[in-house]
Length: 339
Image (cartoon, rainbow, N blue to C red):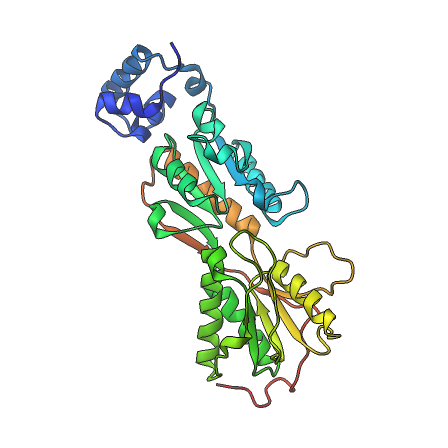
């Protein structure tokens, strides 16, 4: 008989999937009588108990799932985030298993690692197609933590960069260096992250008493990730970019007008992930602490696997500005500083 999902055992016993997992793994929190009954029912339903009894020192198999749209091996922001997360898992004596989706695989019922019941918990890095994301969250038999993507409609825990605060700091950095006309580069429809960063930009302008110019908001790509960046005729003195990736394409468009960073236009980025373009200058940027995000996601997932946390919440990870050479000071620091 093929192995049944843990939820089949849970349904038959009238308990949670976490309780079943704990009982089969011999962890604390389940009474001996209940654990024995769950094991008997699992055997009856054809569950292979060997994968549960072989664990030592609370070691688990953690699945990491990411879309091929955002990952290229060794040369992408999400590949680096995967590496940090896999390392964090190994530090917790856990094995990690990577699965990369594509357009065709996102038409399947569930990721292979879930269908084959190969993992104890799942971390999803970045956005998937919306209906596929919802399908995974609703039908997964193991706990899930989202990394660098969040929506309250998912009812799922997530670990995020502090997008709002980070872009507020990035904008304030430009103001502190004398800039009063500041644009924003990013397309809100592509991700909630960009929406939160845009709101941080707007709030910073408001707090410093600076006007918001809609014409200075530049979309960098469309919903299909195609670059559509077009600059307005009149430019501000600086742009706060929603990512270092966006800053790179902004620099290319500026160069078409014969403008240079930071001599003519100052720029701040977001992510602290420098894409490979030899002629680009190093951007001053808000750092995304991928190492801390990975550690937090793994720790959160293990707590869920062990039944110690059943909440659905988002945890935001703060970081710092990384100063490089893409911002020109228009006024001496402290002079004409806005309260």
